Image (cartoon, rainbow, N blue to C red):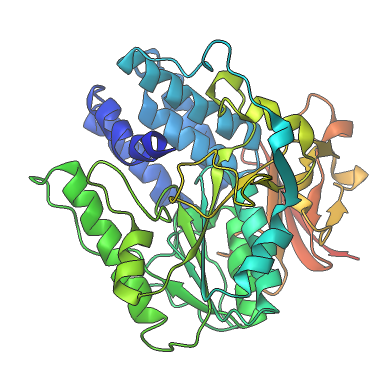
Length: 433
């Protein structure tokens, strides 16, 4: 786990540096991000990335895999998003001439561990904690869906603040009159599950905290020093906006990757470690980015193959001999490690997307099924036109009968269907009951 965290923080930059993308292409990628903010057309942005990726001279570039993976996650093509990030891992290994294949003859006695539902276990421990930190991989809305349900359940335990690394630090989402806006609230908040997290926090009365650093890295500094500077400033911002102002508040902190690691490695000091030092508070730190199904099974944690058949919901394992969390993670880095089950689908959507059955399935009306390739979107009827969709799904089914459903709360929505082969679109209003 420690080596993976360092990979995320440092190795990709080293890989990217070995590839050269002309400034015109980099400018095009940045322009795609800007155009999403102004035009709010997800499928147009994805199609532009596809055209760049199709250029033979740029095939296999990690930075394109990164952007393509992220943009596919925005339009609910989760399988493709994971596949492209697996491709980045493949490139990393080819550069280092390593392999992630499990050690030959690896065995694991699963009778020595006991599974427990992750949500209930976290809630039991959160009662006696004031700060819960949980992480995500930025291309995996599955992690956000779990955090969304945790956010709802923690409210009953007196939690008052929701802090997210993914929020722009100048954003002002603090009241029920505000909403997540495309390109304004945060880069990752352009994804519907993250946006739903923000909406839910607002509705439940959480105080929303943006704590990302606003200072720039020093180009002459080494990567570890730059990373530690960011981690420390994140921790200071988080403390100053929460416990310093209200020592009795209770905070859910939503981080990316290893920022909630409490120990670090190789000179790297994570945000959670700085936060503990600054605040004097030991956070309950939860990992969920290690144990899940990949599209290339070789890239899965080697222990995942032993436990994946034992679970059908997000699960934590406790060692029978010590009653402590099973350390598929390095001991001391995290308090709990969530193991996510392999994906199953209903009406073309993964079941984790409706983790507590809070959403209704909305099928595209028959009279609207005029295309087999495009993007189906739903927007809350009372939100402005720049709001992040409540849900959206890109499809290329070959037949209109198999277009996936949307997953929506009961209520009134504006729907939009955009052709994947032209600029044609249609809009209508409907109510989900």
